[in-house]
Image (tube, rainbow, N blue to C red; front, top):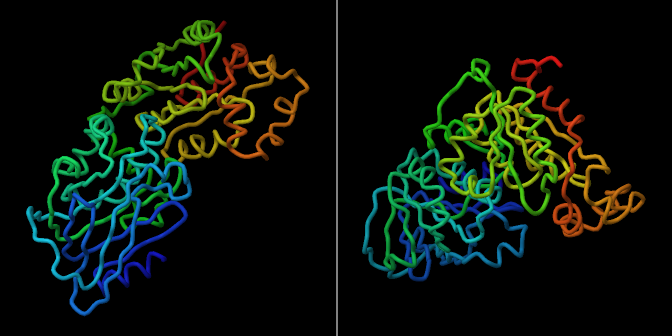
Length: 391
């Protein structure tokens, strides 16, 4: 159902649902009752209206069947329901119901599939809403507590720990999702963009606004990976980066795990460098005008562009990619220089994502050509209004 049709139906009946390839979202602007024991939403219960029932898995990855199998469903009952269950708790703000069940600790999936959709779906309520989270994951809620506290003035409800019937003046079941790290402004009545989302993140984490051109010495954060897509000559890279005049912070996994602190570290830097992977998602914490440098492995050009390249530009960042040559990839020693994996990545891609993942994401590490990579970082300095030291 299209946005215009949704709005017309919502105004006429108080209830409407939106469907697309990624998600299903149902909205009621009339009173609802939510039984957290059975995760049943009763809305709106008008006399004389035939009863209708649907089940929604409130997570925005309908096209990913393996993910959706891990998401609990919410039953939505509409129409003549008599008698509806009695209210045990009455709230004066609407509910937003979504599942955190598939987040798995991966920051890309968390921010792209949950945090940005939460912003799109609930920011316009101006914190006057209450979240109900089936598949409640305390690690996820705690990790993004600053986000939740800026989207809602109320504590998140865990249905398993709060078994009762809650009454709300309205509700949204499900989350709107647009694309990887994306907000399509034309699809948001409030006109929000990724620039607005980054401003929201800056406010949520109380990040400072800096003039990068006035910093005495630019800071570069290098995201260090230990297993897949790791920099095998990281020490050489760091030496070269320091020679260019950067202060270097090597972001080890234990550093990136504390998101509140790492957000401040990324916010203080001028350049964020990393191989294609979840760590690139931390670009949402960069200052306007900062530079994201993505090291793009063999066979990963298209995936790297759609997940981080295009989104970085939409976020108002400077973006540079450094494309790995065959001699820099560990795959050449595994397969030989003439293997299709090396000379014809498209033939591997034609077999589907799993084939790409098994080869290019899982088996590949990098031995960076520091002379060639230096040119990329000189370019980054230029984007910051700086020049490389002579010699």
